[in-house]
Image (cartoon, rainbow, N blue to C red; front, side):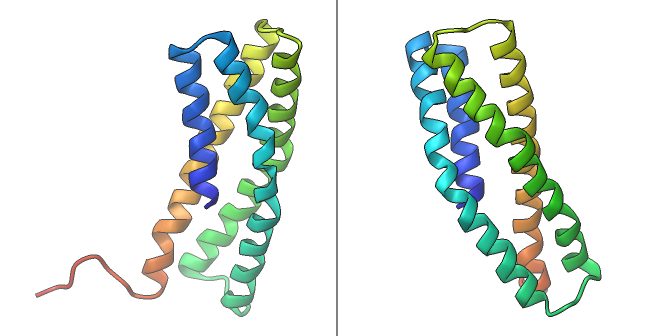
Length: 136
């Protein structure tokens, strides 16, 4: 759910910037803060992961635990403030250099979180010993 939401916001931003009007960009940037309802769901997911890990921190579990603080910090310290700032800028129709600088930072942070979440998703089945194809 997290990766789909972040990916949708990221892709919507890129596509609106490349192919749409300022009105569409404003609609996209004004809509993104409504996705903040996801934050408690992400926290719950992280909490359930801690419970399921049962104190283990080695191997793939350790790798996932090392990524999670960065994902959370990136979201709380960069993505949320950027989304709020950009939403306020589009409401004032201020598509200036500051808007585009913050948007660039937001896109890099979003791409980073998408990558880290994808790595966590990849590692989940490996931890259970699942694989896509069985050896002959």
